[in-house]
Image (cartoon, rainbow, N blue to C red):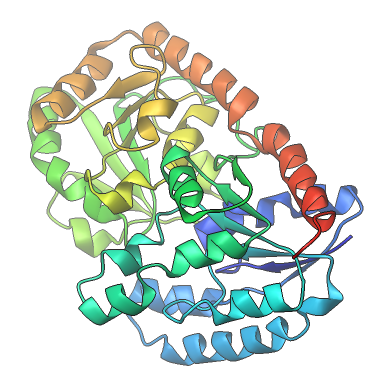
Length: 357
């Protein structure tokens, strides 16, 4: 089977890496010949994260994608991550439908809210229903959680499957070095998402005055947390697992808004895969991933965040380890590539067999 993967990013982009690129070896083992054509390069993301100019990479990406679109007829099935051309009507997806090329579209974010909740009324008017059109014309929608799947059903999508964002359970291992001398509360993400940590800074200050504790943000810009209790550690694909293994507690604060309700809880899954207990905001899929009192806790207010973190910091190492072990087992059963890869292959094979009308 020949597959064209129109990913949003290259390996540096977390969504593309975890939703598809990590599956490529398994796809190949199943006899699939996958051609990857990212829209936005790693150079684009490097420029974006550093605050530099990235428009040249955007233009280049759109041109490359146009060329890729006209080769789609050579493939048995096309995988689209989110959409083919952001902030343009769904003419490209309609074109695939015209060519009778089956395509599977994947969502791990509420990308539709970039249009239907946009501040510009013209964007809302002309693109507010764009993602619904893409979903409706797809052979299958793969949604990262129930919130995204519900939108797909509302759009009239013919086939919807919930595929959670996962990790390779053979790559992620439990902590080997036991407890840190000073307990570490950790977060992992990008410079764009580290904003969710800012409301918790007063909590961190209070806890640090009461107990010896370390706060770490992997992937954040150090300048954004200068003068705060938060240490910014660099992120790389090679070091992300060892970084998480150094955490004693993993956190995922979020605002409760439509965009955040579409997130897929990847941080939580990374923490759990390393046997790290968690505290998270009760937003979206977090409420499904966190088993309250068993793998971690959900915290809404600053006082709840302080109480949950303090409880973990005062708990025994055995209590934290027990929660972490249960979390890792849940990841292996539900949130691992080993559990989900065969399902994705079945979806793609089924898509090829669908008669397009």
